[in-house]
Length: 217
Ligand SMILES: *Cc1c(COP(=O)(O)O)cnc(C)c1O
Image (cartoon, rainbow, N blue to C red; front, top):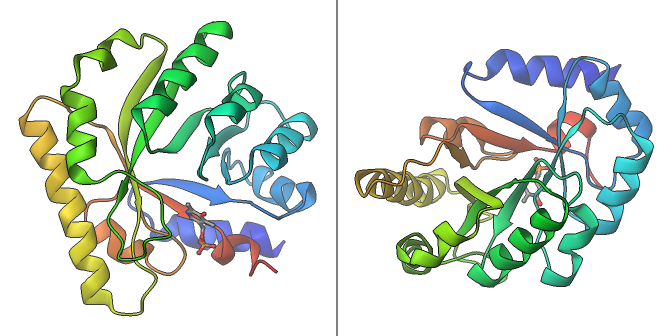
């Protein structure tokens, strides 16, 4: 009941063009079903094994977003069904996703993850590395992946001006890419603590966990 209310409350605040991904990591299938039963279909998971298990247990029309750090050797476990792989942080990983997508006879949608936060521990490409992937002619040879946007995590700080600055860099970069002819539909940034700010700064996909399902332990 609470999950349904939380989802409804958040959706009411989101502009029409912003997609909500409900981040369900560590949360049981029953809670996911509470969200599902409100009509929600986009869910995000961080761990390959947990995602594969939940895929087996839950309705097959769920759109599963992989939002964690993905190791190349694990792509094969989610390739048959994943809807969007957020957080691609190397060309090598794209090559592997392409290979596994081909085996499954499908095209897998991907976002490139940018490293904009100050924390070294976060994953992602620098802006230059990201630009190189687009300029590298080999991207067009990967027929079974579609790069449809960018994903990022801001620094973990209460300093709103700082976070806003990071998102502004990201938004400007997306517009630069657009000017260069790479029109990327999806901009995935913003979590429970900062999604309002992220939307102000051009996000059109927010990944929200604790504000829907409660704190993770
Ligand atoms: C866990 C996680 C989220 C959701 O975080 P909340 O603060 O619970 O909303 C969003 N994005 C990524 C990449 C995550 O790992």
